[in-house]
Image (cartoon, rainbow, N blue to C red; front, side, top):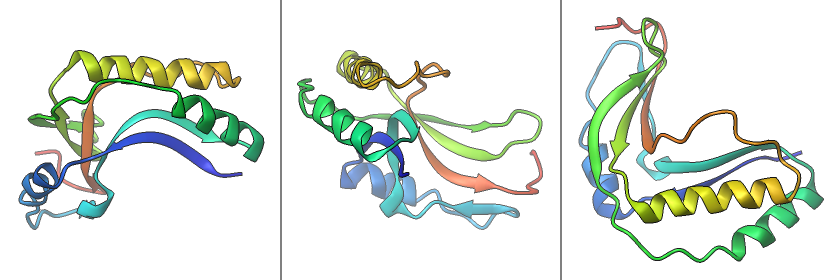
Length: 132
């Protein structure tokens, strides 16, 4: 079964801005800029039929375009950080897109997303990195 998620591909200028952050840091594995994205909805391991239904429901979503703006850096993992992220500014159309993705997922029988949405782009994974 494929492990699926929905996401927004980033504009080239945003990718370039994030790629400029790459610095040699102990325990850091930088994400390849070609893989930068904003995850909208994690679907997980789903069968082919459900994936096709989900894709169809996603194709029906109609949200006006919006500008993606970066806003700060942070880490996930608090005392034991495991990733570095770049924040994405809130936008009503982004929120509408996230809600539409959630409705599409539920309409094909996927469970509600267990996490609240936090717009971000993961730029690095950390392993045994000093917390500072």
